[in-house]
Amino acid sequence: MGGRNQAKGIIFGTAGIPRSSTGPTSWAGIEKIKQLGLGCMELEFVYGVRMNKQTALMVYETAQRHDIKLSAHCPYYINLNSRNPGTIESSRRQIIKTAQIASQCGATSITFHAAFYMGDAREKVYQVVRDNIIRVMEALKEEDINIWIRPEISGKISSFGTLDEILELSAEIPGVAPCIDFSHWYARQTGFNSYPEFSGLLKKVGKKLGPSSLESMHLHVSGIKYGKSGETKHLNLMESNFNYTELLQALIDNGCSGLLICESPNLEDDALLLQETYHKLS
Image (cartoon, rainbow, N blue to C red; front, top):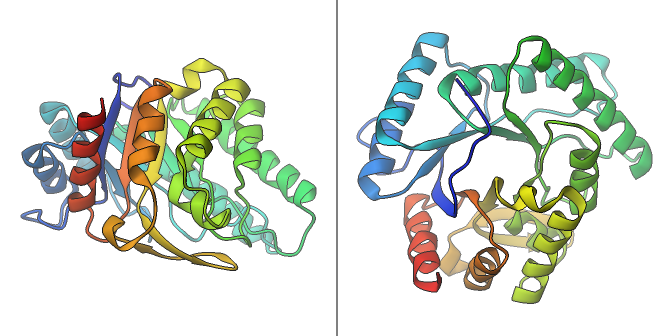
C-alpha cells in the first residue's frame, strides 16, 4: 500500500496524533488533521511498533478517504553501531518492522536515528551503519516493500547523523533518502539559522542527490534548545530563536515539495503556524 509518490509543494502536519484529537487512535488523529486543514501526519512508533495489520488497514483507509499523507518514525532505541551484536540485529529488525507496518498504512517514508559514535572513528561508524542499512534494504526488497528509508539528521553531537553522513548514505544506497531535521541541524551547528544557510543546504542536497531529491522531501521542524553537546529539548517555535520564516522562504525558492512534520510540543499549533506562514510567503 505504501509508495514514494509525493504531491507538489510542502504539506504540513504533526509528529503523532494532534493534541486536540477526540481519541488516542491513529485514525482519530488523521480525522483531526483533516479537520484542522493540515495535510499529513507522522505515525510515531518511537516506543515500539505495536500496530497490527487490521489496525494498519483502518489507518490506510482513513488516510485515503481524507487524502492525508503519512510518514512514520521508528523506535528511538536503534543503534546500528552498538557493541552488542544483538542490539544491532534488533535495530535492523525494528527498522524493517516499521517499514512493513508503515507501508501497510500507506506511508511514503520512515525515519530513524541510526547510531551513536561510541567513541569510534566517524569513518568506521559510517561503514558499519551503511552495511547494516544495506542489509535492511535487501530484506525489504525481498518482501517487495516500496517505501523510502530515511536516516535522520541528529541534533546531538554524540549521534551519527551529520548532513554529509546522511547525504552520502542516500547517494550510495538505492531507496535511502535523507530526513532533514532543520532544528536538529540548527542545534548541532550552534545557530545554523539564516536564509543563505537554509538555501545553501537545500542546494547541496540537490547537487548531491539530484533535483528530484527536492521534490519528495521528509522534513522535521520545531523550536529547539541546545547546548555545547547539541540538542537538549524541543520547544514551541515562539519560545525558540529558530528562524522558521526564512527556512520556509528557502523551501519555496528552491522549489521543494514533500512532508514537513512539526515536532514542537504544541504540535498542531505550530504546524498551523508553519502552514499559514508558508502560504503567505508563496
